[in-house]
Image (cartoon, rainbow, N blue to C red; front, top):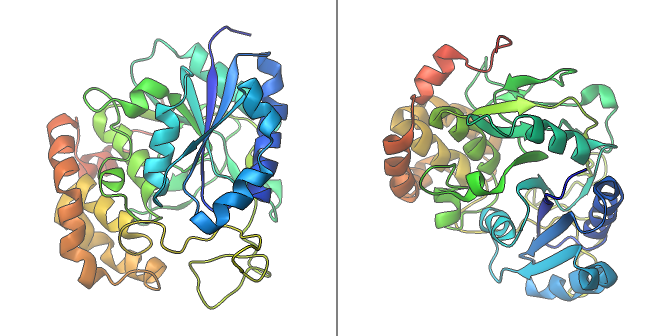
Length: 339
């Protein structure tokens, strides 16, 4: 297809068997690119007790071939791990997945071809495949977040044609250099990676920033990336921040253990992101929704001032680089059907 490389980036934390399922699913869907044109870069930030299991489960033959690259981050943080995976990638484009995914048939190919067709468009931000969950029917595929009712967004719909959208989490594709560029690009996860913040809020943060900086997010009609779990009827425990499929032991298999996953409580990133994107007024507007959705994780009153401190540097950066405010973005709705 091309001599350009596509890099799949994955942050892994305490997944072993699910990580291998994800890797093998990626390998099968990358075959259409031909040998030597793709890679899978995993940045692992597992707990030390789980690392041995992760390494034992890795398909080492593909590491020797160079198709799979494993890099280690010795502290927990999803955002820095994804950035480190991108930094260690060599592709013109990066596709981001979680470590517990099945790749939709043709998903990589369709995302790549969309980017190639639009490679001369200077406004290109993220392009998204839809996402679904393993226990859901395909009718529940989702391409975007609906921001019409509140600013954090509810799940939207999937589209059968290319069109601009608000934002969504992975699976997404973008230009690698644009994602990492701190001067003329996205500046990655910004404050969330600068302070190694805990899980939650990163998708909204990097999803909204492109619009404020003058870029566009797109939906690509293709098969969905399938997220494996959590399964609401099975994965239920007293600690809502931890999902397991077996009793946790020092040597036992762990599944998506979010505990101690970075600085601050889970979902602190939503509060920080609101400050960076729209200042304290945006924090105040969204405080009731953050309390409603994530109150079991975070006490917003306690973390209000620390969140503003965490976001201080990136807010100054964004204020100097953005072409519209968050409020202007909501009023203009630049993701409408007409292009």
